[in-house]
Image 1 (spheres, rainbow, N blue to C red):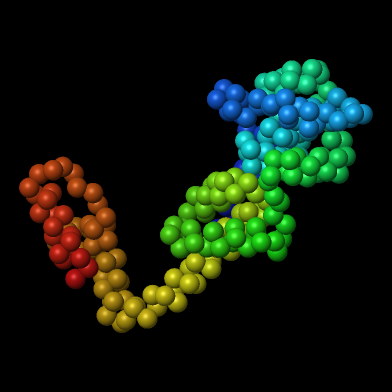
Image 2: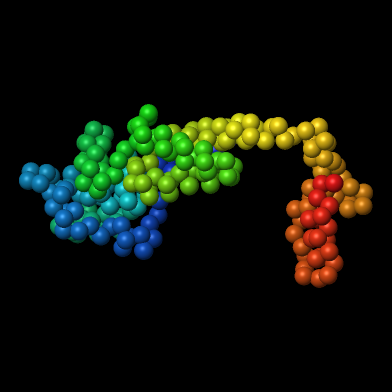
Length: 238
């Protein structure tokens, strides 16, 4: 599973504003006087000032800014608009041109000391290495995607598009599988392969495959359960 790890509906959600909690509202949408001054140079219209400040507050919340800035949670917009002394409805006029939004985000990233991660950049190379390292430890694509988001936010790197990041997860998982094969391939002798195959065959004495037996948890702390756990450690796949 690579970019197919998410449905179209899930991808749409990852590109949009989620619901916001009361804690997030207080934590992220409380712009300072300096923030308000940054977006309010002479001549900038209220819609642009409000749109910029919404973007500024959104970036550390989500790690990116959805294209439809005007769809930000109404409670968040209201708090930001109050700081600027403009009507929340002004946001509906913001960012009709994509270039306006992207230009503003670049200014905001510089102001907040965040960076972008264009293809081939050092930031992307470091993200690729991070994903490979994590994929060597665990294989869940959703978990890897979320770990990448956390990593990017900690590094103050604006998250690439959801589809781009999903493809990177898929690439990392394949690279990890190939590397694992190289590292352990020589250990898979004929005898070891035969032992592994036997683990998938139902054992008459156990009433299940040996793999099922090995991974089944103890039912209680009785002497019988303790003996079974010891058997698993000593008998293994033999």
